[in-house]
Length: 89
Image (cartoon, rainbow, N blue to C red; front, side):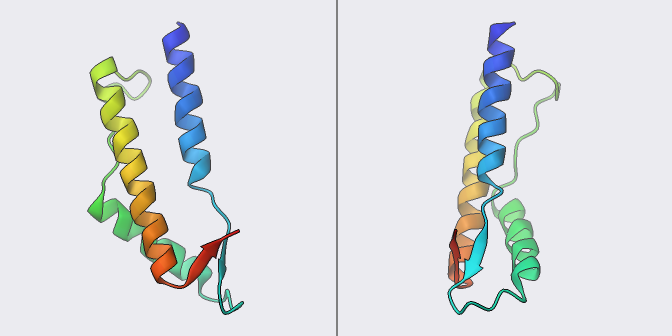
């Protein structure tokens, strides 16, 4: 089914956006992994991602919920990292 393929492509594009490289503005990245974990848990608490009832196939009405939730989660994560003094590379 072509729709399923489009969903998979969009989903993979969104998840690849989450794998941004970060660098602290001070040049000291010793706490990077700690801060990434902190911001990930904060983002998941503030903007939980939506899992479709059937993980292999989202219904059309669920798909927009899943995409919106992923976007909000990524925005919370990025905001947290910027507040901690990181910039994306």
